[in-house]
Image (tube, rainbow, N blue to C red; front, side, top):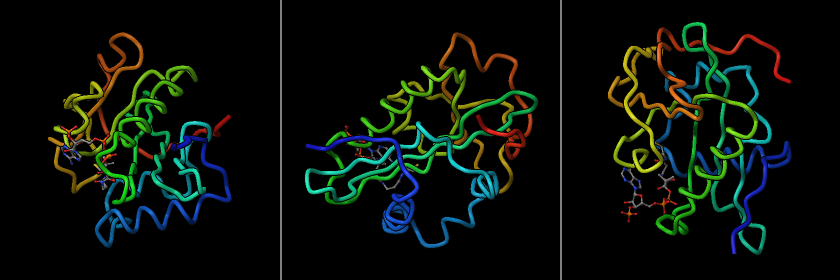
Length: 165
Ligand SMILES: CC(C)(COP(=O)(O)OP(=O)(O)OC[C@H]1O[C@@H](n2cnc3c(N)ncnc32)[C@H](O)[C@@H]1OP(=O)(O)O)[C@@H](O)C(=O)NCCC(=O)NCCS
């Protein structure tokens, strides 16, 4: 039995350790991390998954970003411990957090990732949405949480500058 809960400050270093385990070394050199520097993840949407013994099995984080003049959520990183991969936990973390994002009033979500995985959640390639280089444009994907929320939204993806609620 795995329980999903919003990430708390005390979870932070365990989540970092899980990401270090699941991603190649140097993950923080990726351009997407420049959008996260000095901006806290969105609380209430970033989730941890723990097993019945309290051991961390997976985690997902979201950051707020600007796309041109619009606001969006940047999904990721999401990771599931190798001993739990393929059990549907990644899908649960993504679907649960997207439902929370919609309930919180967010209109659109983007990410940089593998289209073959994220397609199942409704993500599609975004045209004209420019991540800081170097980013493969084919990996820049988006999902509208409200009808047509990506229509007319394009431009550079930049670091969040507003105060969070
Ligand atoms: C990607 C990840 C979060 C998926 O979590 P998970 O709990 O294993 O995923 P689920 O059990 O919900 O889904 C498993 C399905 O996703 C598929 N899948 C996993 N990673 C995939 C990828 N990169 N591309 C395409 N399909 C992928 C599996 O083949 C499996 O397919 P099936 O349903 O047809 O059998 C997990 O594998 C992970 O942590 N990987 C390392 C870190 C990472 O790559 N994160 C994503 C960054 S883009």
